[in-house]
Length: 250
Length: 237
Image 1 (cartoon, helix red, strand yellow):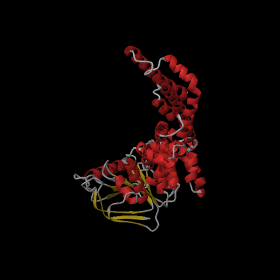
Image 2: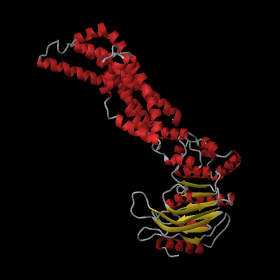
Image 3: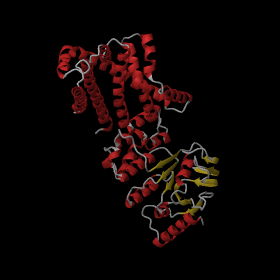
Image 4: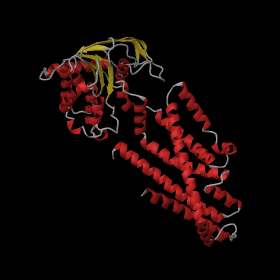
């Protein structure tokens, strides 16, 4: 029941947040224009709910694709970066230096070159979750597991593929945690990209609502983001459990 | 098979003082040899230098042409995704499959072959590790505390079996068990404890080289154990 658990946790936080907002509204007598009353929230949900739901689903699909690309790319680069060759050292140095630069800062350049469509959202989502993944993957892949690897090395059987398999297996929990954790970053990256310049997705919905000062719509969008994040992270956790079951056999 | 270390000096990374200085050591097989010494004296380091697992020393290391030297320690594990039988089948040369079954039976690990390594007891893990190593093609196998978690009767049985099955191979057994070392070894190499922690010589002492069925006078064993411990502690041959 990872989805229900995650969704209930999110719902608890969401309801607490909205209740606090309404508490502040009624305590300080804030206007309906600034903080919408409960009824207005329900009206906006009824009128725009389906459209916003589709926008959030669209965001999730882009985040999933971006995350997938980031995991593949990080794996590939970490395999090069794990070695102590010149290419490996350069890759590690580049990764450590580049990750310090905020991707959001270069997002406008991406939009300038690629436009406000799918490609820009996908690229920004990938880049935002790529660097944390890469640093973790390099750490895991470059750390020898001597207790297991020694026999294969001593008998001349250790090749790159076996070495990676051993290190992946020995760090499976860590890898799954990192991938699930970066799923949230992928969602954030996509929403940030949409908020900055895209014309689709729930980030775009929030940007429009901000220009209209429509807090009710923003609150609905936040609920949908939480819903889809819960779905995606639960799916990732489920996949992680399947992989573990297949590899460890328990 | 021979192994020679001449004028060997080695200092651990991030240490100011060498652990070995101008050390000379000759090992000429076949047979069952032991390397004995108290904790921290440098037995594992010397063994790893001998097997080629550690480099960065000064001096010379010479072995017989194309000799295969293997070093094994008691913390080794098989990949967690394999069962014992899957792993053994993967790493055993096909011509040794029958021998593998026989040894597995004698080492009492046949019943555990379908289990994963993590599910085995410490002693069973040691036995599986020894099994896979002795089935490899080697000239010298260095076993660093490889039976540390195995009960004494089973350990004796395994050592007798190894000596019986592989009379043409060379074994260097590292153990803290003075009695076992005295009983089984042809020659015992002793790394003596020194006040400054720098080992400059390897002492030698003949062992009893017992084989299955052999019986030695317990008083003789006791005397040799005492001599060995004295040698390891004081460096006096």
